[in-house]
Length: 537
Image 1 (cartoon, rainbow, N blue to C red):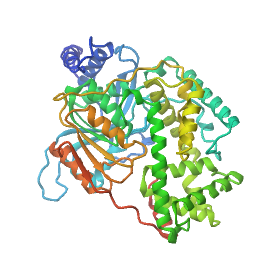
Image 2: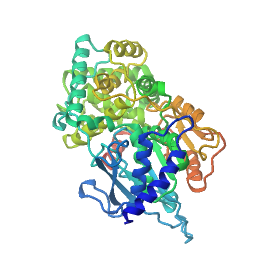
Image 3: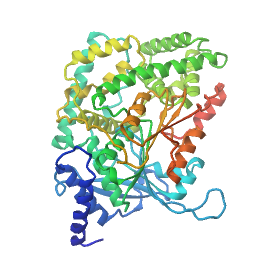
Image 4: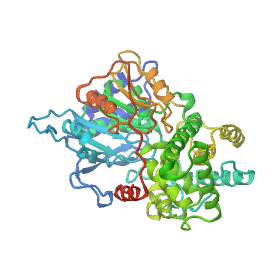
């Protein structure tokens, strides 16, 4: 521990560094920037006391945990503080090839998996996987739970015991009465967020997530940050790069969100709904090519008919009393994120239509023991997105835009509306999104990874981020759509990731990789064994 005097000296020098790092054209440094400098200096002096992880985290003993204090409000850095939980595994320093050569440590690699609302506490465990061993040799792998998530000043907007309401409906073309019901539920949820959290609710936003990241950097003893952000993590990573360009060492933007201020967040969600329709078509085409295995139809249209028959049957009689059309939709939405789900989902749908509901119930039911975590994740998701930007406050706008979109993209349009609609009735102040930019020479080279058919983070977002960050390199996985490429199935993409993290090399402005192989269909027996072997999530 440094003395209080050392903290104040460090605060002064870091304040100058942070203010110098303010983006061009930002004008007078804001109170939040000054507050970030103060908090970062304090964190650099105190560090993080890592020790055994709490039992409830279910992390192995090799992972060490600690807490980081950050201001709730960066404009008042000496005011109320909240604690963020942090996890770490030290760099192994060993060549995974078995040469016995010592690998020089390159510092900490901090990861955020996205959301908003997802925890990164489990990231350090990735170092045991073959794909990550070379990176884990050189870097301490650091994860954390962002503000609001898990044990990090957790948010809640409703009683978790009532969060899962299955079996539920999910009409593709909802009636006026159904829409009125969902509007009322959205208003009630927004009201619950305000009542449970009070004035603190306004401080859960992407700009504060970026500021927290800088305090974490300082607490880890790093002068410059090495960061891997996935999905939503790319957005506040881009905010970080805009606010603190001189604090960036290396940054990977994996499955990039479109940072255009005009698209945060309402229009991004419209784009996402349209992209999920294309990805749903990819799944149906794949299932049709394997009709001999699944019997769902030998055209994409016939596979859709099979899905619609299942929806109608579940509406009349939920499978196992637990799985209705809403749970079916949620399960197949995951197939839009990750194509390794395709064989399991196709088998479950096939078995259900043939009279065996067990695989579908196993894959689609909601588990009460997971309700608190799911409710917390949704509360953080909404707090961040609703606070980040203006949203339409007139239901007629939402109804008009999404009725039009649902005519050509029915798969996920209305589901996306019901997820985000509380933002129309949000009671905390809205921010104006920061204009993400980095001019030539402002940043060291950064790396963007993107799949052309990603639905959760449509490819246009990667192109937009690439345009906005001078010196960035874009690696594209062609004709593929899995969400999250780092450490995934594509050796070409992973090679670019390793070259960047380990050597700082980027492949020019743009590079492309052939798609990873489509999943192989699995007969029912193999699918059951594979499902049983998958870790619980």
